[in-house]
Amino acid sequence: MLALWIILVIVGFVLLVKGADWFVDGAAGVAKKCGISALVVGLTVVAFGTSAPELAVSVTSAIQHSTDIAIGNVVGSNITNILLILGISALVHPLPVNKSSLVLDIPVLLVSSALLVGLGVWGQALSWYDGLIFLFIFIVYMTTLVVLAKRGKTAPPPEEEKEDKPPRTKVGAWLCRMEQKTWFLVILTLVGLGMVVGGGTLLVDGARFIAEYFGVGEDIIGLTVVAIGTSLPELVTSVVAASKGETEIAVGNVIGSNLFNILLVAGVSSLFYPLTFSIATNLIDALVALGAAVLLFVLALAGKKNLGRVAGAIFVLSFLGYYAYLFAVRL
Image 1 (cartoon, one colour):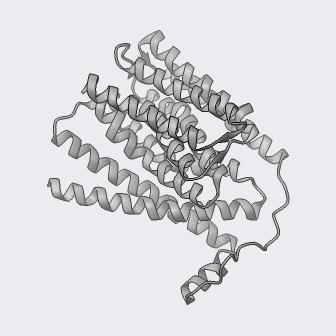
Image 2 (cartoon, rainbow, N blue to C red):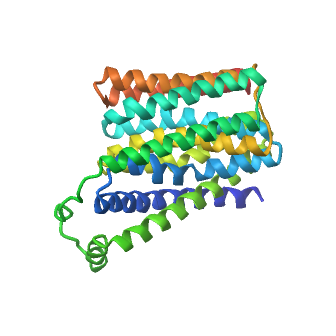
Image 3 (cartoon, rainbow, N blue to C red):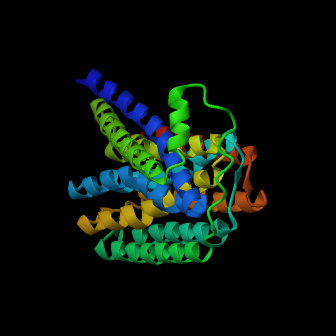
């Protein structure tokens, strides 16, 4: 049985890698065709798609009253998204931070992260009314994003640029032709999204079984195996985007995913069952998540709207330090 789950984890990872590749290509192509900025695509479509595993895992955990996994998944994913994913992405390729992210997206993330800490400490649980507060902020944020996107909408870019190198095979030539068609890009995006979500779900289920097989606690599973597992779509998507030069999608994907995790995932999950918030454990993790968001804001300002390799190294070292604490103190 254990061997089967290990194989399923590997299959899930393969689906994630290839699905993320197709998803980024399709999403970026649709954005250019429609004249929508890649940043907005990253903050909405890509972020929602890659946050689907977190939503599924946390809601299922809440229904099953496994609140340690539900809240650990949200907080752990946010820590992983900023410190590990943005860190690795910045090491692969310097990441410019859009002005709108500094003015709107990151401040909303800071407020949401602080609210998660405050509401959790206040009632020592995230109840249904806390969930309604998160969902209200989510609706206001998304409405603002759509309005700003419509105001800033530009004409589609000219149809040139695509051919850096001539395709070497008939399949390559066919793909080049098909990537000029909007309907094909939409299908590519949807298929890629399905592979990302399916692969992430498969990987998380397998990793959870393996962790439980070796007797690891639920809170650690939520913060590590489940959090990293559900963040793998963001990791693969952002790193692939960064390597392709689609840096706005890489940054927007992480910020958007973190907002989705708190406002949508925690919001919806707490409607099903109160998510217990332990002062002894969850508070430290939620403060680390808030600290990661503050670090992102500070480094983006210090780097003059740019996250370079130094910032990437700081993120990754901070992530390793947090995990050293988890395994040294909490395991």
